[in-house]
Length: 480
Image (cartoon, rainbow, N blue to C red; front, side, top):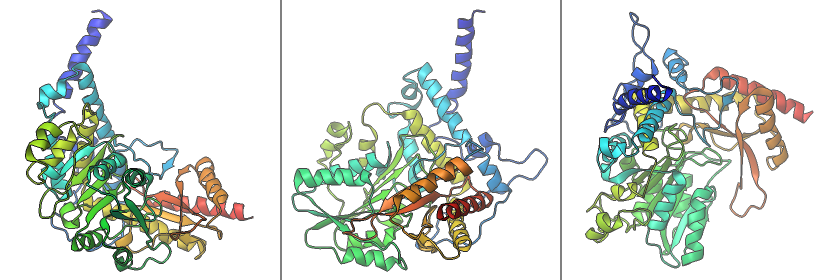
C-alpha cells in the first residue's frame, strides 16, 4: 500500500471517529469523566460527583472559608496539560484548555478539514448552534433566544454598545476601573454621536458593603442618564461588584444595564435572569478554559421595557430581524447575532464542551474552590507579611473572586518595583502572574500598581504556599 493510500485510509478512520464527536448537544452529560478518565480504576469505588444545585439563592455568598485538596480535585487538576515547571497564575488574561476539550477541538478541526462543509452536512444549515445555545441557556439561567457564542468579551461589548439606540447628550455611567474593551466602543459613541461617558468612583481600599457601589451609581444618575455599564469582576483589582443590586437600581430608574463579564463564566455561577441585567458579555477562553476566540453573549429578550437594539454586527438582519420591525421578543435575537459570516464552528463546539465539563464538575463546587483559594491566598499573604502591604480587594465572601490584587511595597505608585517583582517571580521561582495599574480615585493623575494573581481549579494550596514564600523572599531581597 502506498503512503498516500495509507494516509487516506487513516483519514477515513479519523473522520469516522470524529463524526461521532459532533452531536447536536455537545459532550454528553458524563462525557467529561469518560474522556478525562477521572473514574477510579476498575473494582474500586468511583469518585463521588458534586451535586449541581439548580435552585441556589445566588444573592447569598458562598462560604469560602474551607477548601480541600482531596482526590476529586487532584483528578480534575490532572486533566490540564500546563507546563509542570511553571505555576501559571494569569487566568485573568487567558486560561488553559483541558486535555479532553483539546481532543474534541482537534477532532472537530480534523473533520472540518477532511469535509470542509461537514458541520452543515452533519448538523444542518444552522450548524447545530441552536442546540448548543439551548445547552448554554440551561447553564446560565436564561432562554435560548437570549444567548449565543461570540468571539470574545470585546466582541460582545462592541455588539451591545454599537447596537443600542444612543443619541446626542445621552449619558452612560461607568466605573473608573473599566477595561479598554468597553472604553473603546464607548469613546466611539462619544466622539461620533456626542454621547456623554461619565465615570463613577467605586471603592478600592475601603470596600465594606454592596451599598457603597449602589450609592455611588445612584448619586450620579441624572435626567440624561440612559444606561449604566460596569464590570462584574474588575480586571484591575479582582473585586466582584454587586451585579444584582446594580441591575435592580438600573431597572428602577428605567436605565439599560450592560455588564462586562470577562471574568464571570467559568469562575462563578451565573444566572442572568436572577441578575436582572439587560446585556452581559463574557469570555469563553479565560476561566471557562475554552479555545481562544470564543465568548458568551447574553441579551435579555423577555419581559418588559426591552431596549431597542440594532443587530448591526450580524449577517441575518434582512430575514431574521427586519421582518419583525425590530420588535424585541418577537424573534430570536441571539440567533440573529450568532451568524456573522464564516465562524470558527469547531471552537464554538469545543467551548460548549468546556461548559458541559464545568457543569459536570459542578459550577457551585468550582466557585467555592476557586474563590476559596483566593481567600486562602489573601490570608497567607497577610500572615507572611505581618500586616504590611496593600490589598485592593477585601477578603469578604460577597466580593470574593479568583483574582487577588496585592502590593507588598510601601509606595504603591512605584511601577518599577512591581514590574521587577513580576519578572523575578517568573524567572527565579516559576510563578507566572501579572501586574495591573489603576487610579484609586476619579481625578487622580498618579496610578497605583499591584500584582494580580489568579487562582483557578487547577491550582492547590501547596502551590499557593510556594508563591507566598517566593514572593516574600524576593521582596526581602529587593528591600535590602
